[in-house]
Amino acid sequence: MSDKPPIVEPAAEPEAKERGGVTLKGTPVAPGLALGVVHRKDYDLNKAVPQRVPLEQVERELNRFHKALSDSKGQIESLKGRLTGKIPLEHVRILDTHLAYLKDSVFLSDVENLILNEQMALEASIGKVIADFDRIFRLVQNETLRERAVDLRDVGIRVLRNLEARAEGDKATAVSPVEDYILAARELSIVDMFNLANDHVLGIVTEEGGLTSHAAIIARSMRIPTLTGVAGLLEKVREGDFVILDATEGMLRVNPDELVRSQYSRSGKEKESTPEQPAVAGLARRQAKTRDGMAITVSASSGNLPEVDAAAKAGFPSIGLYRTELLYLIDRDQPSLESLVAHYTSVVEHARGVPVTFRLLHADSSLEVPYLHDARELNPGLGRAGVRILLARETVLRRQLQALMRSIPAGSETPLSIAVPFVTDCGDLRRIKEILFEERYALRKSGVSFQDQVELGAVIETPVAALGARDLAREADFVMVSLDSLQQYLLAADRENHELRAAFDSIHPFVLRALTSITEACEQSARPLSVFGVTATLPANLAFLLGVGVRQFCVAPVGLDDFLEVLERIDSRQARRAAGVASRASCAAETQTLVDNYRHGFARS
Image (tube, helix red, strand yellow):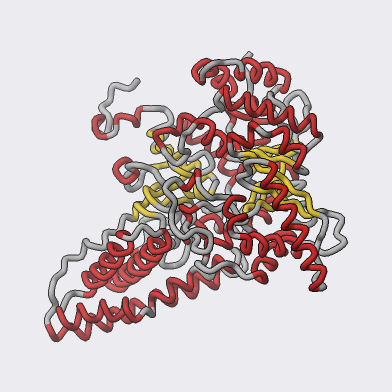
């Protein structure tokens, strides 16, 4: 170790001595890997001093306001044009909300009144109006109003930055000190994804921001690696720090050493992609096999059209899981039958001939979809979610089932595959089958073309479904395990609680026992079984899942190369022995040695 004193005070950043640098953890919004320097954007709307301006300057302030509004409108229109055709049209339309706020009479009149009546400077007027709206919206425990507050705040910040740019005489100088950077911000917002020239950032990491917000939707569509929920981010990351953002694993490494940087840089070159040049990886070049040659079925996990495109180009044999929540989260109104049919038809077309398994809408009351839930329940995760709420709101369910059947032409050799989320027992599946029968009859009467061959699957994510796996396997055409949810409920550990994150780092031995019984039930009933979720593809877990008999995995396209690399290092016979030992353990600590051995995807000799 060098005797030279460190440049930075040791007390200021004691963790920086670690080889990997300071490691911060958060919640993945959009998976991917990004390496680069940090640019902080922690815009304080209250930083402008509420100073008065002379009466003769009032007109000048009003003119500055309307010029900045015009600049902002032009940028958003330009951004819409740039994104059209590259991300789904419904995502592009999110920017219409920002355009509407730029013309909102309440917003405009409130700012102008402060300038005219109180002679308040423009910047302070905008900051006060946005802060007042923000405070009011946040006092109401309503996610939709909170999203509106974020959108209005975005618009206000965009206008303020344009004012700064005009003051400096060069729009480019108001953007960032570097061309490519990883954005560190307090809150996930659309305005910070793009500079004033509409160039997007390498990656985004924030302290706050919802997974279903408008910003999150666009981040996923743009394939910008994004991580949120990072506690203390702006206290621990400084301007110009070099970071490794692994938004697939939910980690941010701050100032790692050169060895760690080089390892990530090598894998990062293989993963980098843009909406214009999506990654083409994995199965288009290599087969999914273990080190000893055991073949594994790998299908894609997707939730929007760009991810389906990426899956098709990567050579996935199927879209094993298509999450259908997106269209239901964009607007407060229920999607029309026509918009659902159009979207699901596009999914099938973008899949380019490979089968697609659609998971029915899975929304609990925390998402505050007004036509599903009247109010947020005390415990949304244990309330009316998935099939429970769909059976309680049959009109929503029937519309989705009709749209799905109409998305595949009549006579197609590929049956429609539908996965039912949050199943508790066979009664859920039987009721869905009855409704499917009724909707088929209605479609035949209307003379509309549709696919009447439907395979119905059960998604096991509740403990009661795991206990009844044998019955569900006999009732369903196929079975899926949502490992993240199953672990959460079996361990009674909220996966959004960062203090309980260690519970999800590896599979608990009792969870392994439940998985063993599920795989055995599916084998005896000759039903296909697949597993999906972030924890299902972690290197520390993959060997144990193979060991208990899982042979089909749903993997996000962006994580395919990593999955295949880990898979190729695993010996299936060693994995089987390790899983047997691990599942017989009486506590998680007893399996830690085995977990360490497989953390990099292979057993140590």
